Image: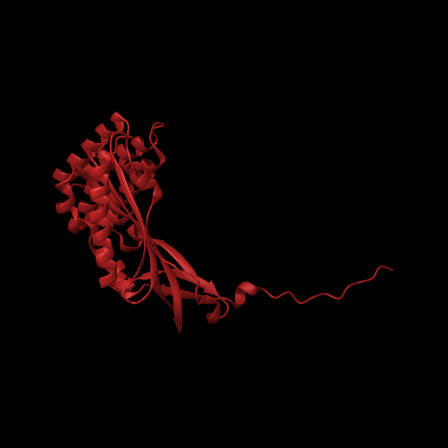
Length: 193
Length: 85
């Protein structure tokens, strides 16, 4: 006779799991970002979520912006998140750069007021192709402005201001004197571990 | 409601500025823009714009990013229509 193995009790792991509501930080207005599933609340901590702001805020103007959150705390059935990154979609940025225009990009590694190391990626697109000297001048003005702003703000406040208004609009009148500007964008603001 | 109309017009404006979008699609989008600007409370006109966008979204020459934007427009206009009803 063949050996009959004793039957194992099958446990459905999914039945043990609970749903947790993801709550955004106050910079995005404490809105509900979605739901996530976990069996223990401890497993939720440090989980990362990437959300499109156009969908969450229901604003078409922000459809090209993705924000990354990290779960820092669990309160009951709510998972409280914090901001860790801001990103403009690459597909949108790629569409900005056309023939006969200059792209002035800059990548900076900076430290915020609350001692968080960040990577700040910005882009300026001009109306016409411009000379190297002009590009250098524009880059210098933009980088000085970014360094000044980052040093004066906490990371959360920085992302908050970027979400509320276009940060580089403040520097626009100054760089417009050098060359015609088509667009200024913040490519990425990322918290480095 | 004003916000919704503003949102719709913003997306249409962005699509009209995009140089990768074909002329026939841009023509359809300008009519959509005019109809929304002038008759945003007319359900029939809003339905007309939805049908125009449906036709346009099936265009083979339309880039993928524009296609998703047109679907977004359709859903926004649909919402606007439902709120008026």
